[in-house]
Image (cartoon, rainbow, N blue to C red):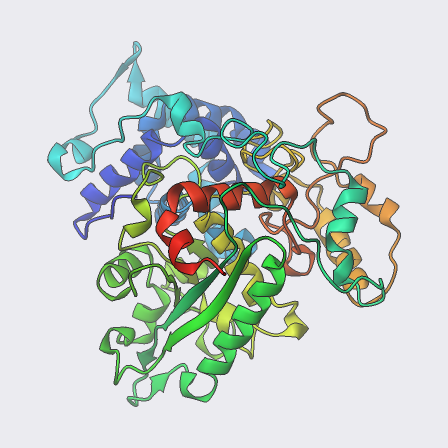
Length: 497
């Protein structure tokens, strides 16, 4: 992805318009729908369809409404399809503003004023910027942009022992995939997946960049010096558990936390640390990433505990749990040689790294869950809910189509599933038939009696941390294929003998 230059708001909006114009409609829909609260979603559906048919109007509309939160959130998620944004973190005041921004009546008036006799009045604010300042759109046809990483089985059919094109997983298969997470199941080891021909299992180094700030008394925070190394080691160990059997393992190469050795880590004040977004990460990573193959994980911002968001820290308030600058789907980046781009990184927030928050067993290893999810994007995996009920929009066939749990599930489903997973992982034997209700999409074959349900345990979903436990066969095949095809240098350098 081309970096967003540090220029004025007009060019930023141009850049966002560029991102919108190169994003497939189904992905735009998935991003726009959650911006409306549930009680207004039905009323804005027609208007959202209109915006999807006229994507050039999206930025001018939200700009005219002064809905900065919408544009910030939309821009952040478009910049990285791997962004994990917790919509439940939005405050009531922000929710009200978001609701106002997508009010159907006001949108209809705006559309009526904007369009006269089928012609568009030029938006002078956007026209004021020089066209040369907007990054050029990639020379790809719309059908190529849908999944620039080709779906299986086109490139991998019949290659090696890993399954590359399977029917959607049944509930029984999903349970078998995660059985070892139940301490009383008698199963101690996870499934060992096959390999694509030519793929060699890898142990990939990870480098952590822990950003900090100084308070008014000059004290440098957070107090990484007490636990940075142990927290990083614990996270890598837990990531390895999630990836065991896939051919991917990781090792801790370095933890950068001391601003006396690495001055770039000190972001100045609390607000700057909380608001270190994509511009900040990419600007820093282009200069300070450890190049040559390691995965660089950057840590900043918090919305819990002693370092929680201040009211004006918008990016922080929107609750970005993690993201990667490697766009796993429609991106011009996925081509031979892209593994050497200097700004590739994984981001997680401070709460996901801190052993006092989510980087611990008592929080279901929520830090490692988000890091493992983002590393999945780093190697080409998409969300299981890509494209909603269309299949297979995550480019693998054994993940059943499903809607995003945050925006498409029944009101109590997420709470009920989370409790089921907690019982399962604490050694109880919850009734698996209770999972049969979690079906947000009709069965593709029209048969309502089979046990194909939503991806209730998948690492690439947006479920609560306790439920995200593993990958499918076809997802593992895609991980290996992406490493072979687009990260050959990493394959050669980190292959285990």
